Amino acid sequence: MSKAKLAKAFQSAEARNEKAFVSYIMAGDGGLNALKDQLLYLQEIGVTAAEVGIPFSDPVADGPVIQEAGKRALAEGVTLKRVLSFLEEYKNSFHIPIVLMTYLNPVFQYGIEAFAEDSQKAGVSGVIVPDMPLEEEKEVREALQERELALIRLVTLTSPEDRIAQITDGAEGFIYAVTVKGTTGVRNSYQDDVGTYLGQIKEKSKIPVLAGFGVSSQEQAAELGKHCDGVIVGSKIVDLFHQGQKEKIKELIPQREARTH
Image (tube, rainbow, N blue to C red):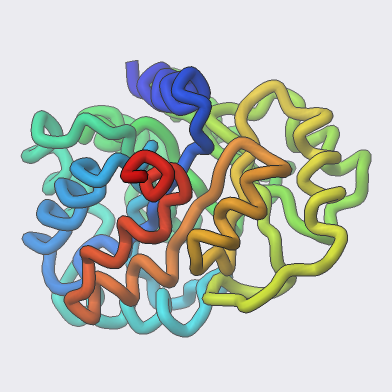
């Protein structure tokens, strides 16, 4: 069911002729109780899916905004185990698919089989592990597959064409197309060839391709969406929740504005 829930959410967006909009939040930034309110709010404003980040002491892919959010969550005593228990407790409240973003170390500490099992119990649809290369994913992928969870792979701007072909072959959920070099964070512009790069991935992928890293405005989301199936927005959403300006998150969703006119 879990993996299917994610596929269904993308199909629904496509049927409405909308681009998918996936929001990232840091679990436990503001305490675990804040996570419930944040997910319910994102669900209410119509995001396609929510990516829930697990705080980690060495977040190599994260920019300053998400790193700081992770530190605040760690200071609240938030762990992978606590997040999964929390999601399991409230899973009937959330109708949107939830994707976990965690580094490999917490998964190993947890135990791969136990992590996959508890993710399934928590109603999670997929998992992103940004520091796990394709060559090392077998054990994690198999444990997740057994429980109908998608292991979501990343493609980067530096991935050559044959590598893109390798990553998209047998990929599940969606392809996370990283649109900047470096870590996550708000960017004012993208490289001129980002459309070509997204087109290359789209050509090879049988599943939705979403652009992420640095998307911070409705204009950027709409522009990137022309070349792929949707976007993932993280740092901007994390910052708006932290600043107590959640109503501004709605303004990031391209189709939302179109519907109100």
